[in-house]
Image 1 (tube, helix red, strand yellow):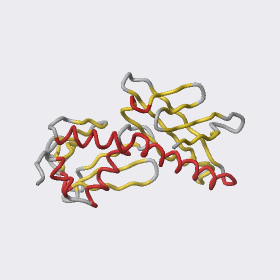
Image 2 (tube, one colour):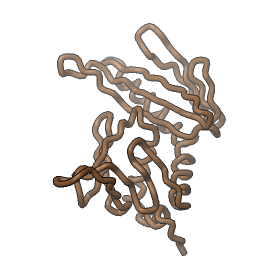
Image 3 (cartoon, one colour):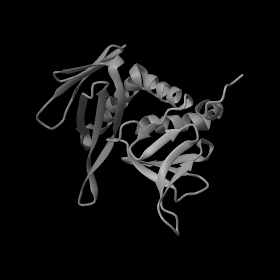
Image 4 (tube, helix red, strand yellow):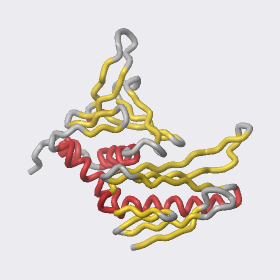
Length: 206
């Protein structure tokens, strides 16, 4: 499995990107897939006079030494379909080459009692701890249980929130906040298979 494509960071410059099960390469920078520990990606609508003039697609990958590969490319009205197809193909390869591994490592870490931090969120066996300002009183760290967790996703952001306490929520930027897309996928899995809630909680399944 290998995918290579020329991306357009602007009208005048092309940069080659490739991904396979061993490495990702952007322009003249290479990163070993086995060393990648987090990633982010998403779409950004560029507005002119309140109208979307183009869409930019961004990706960021970090490895276990702290190195980062980061790039954006764009589409205009005439190129939007081909560029969206390219974006979706890169996303598909990201998940197949290392995204699923990273998500499984996150699930394993939480089930083993470790705390996983994503921006201002803390993921644990109890759920997700987020900053919360109640109607009366001081700010608190509110733990949303896994079974009470939901999200809304629109454009560049995902809002992680409690179903029973809608004001307990936090926004993550899909394009820049590493692990935001991983958390989004994890919540989708919890909706599809509730047994994962027991896995995250550290319970032994028969």
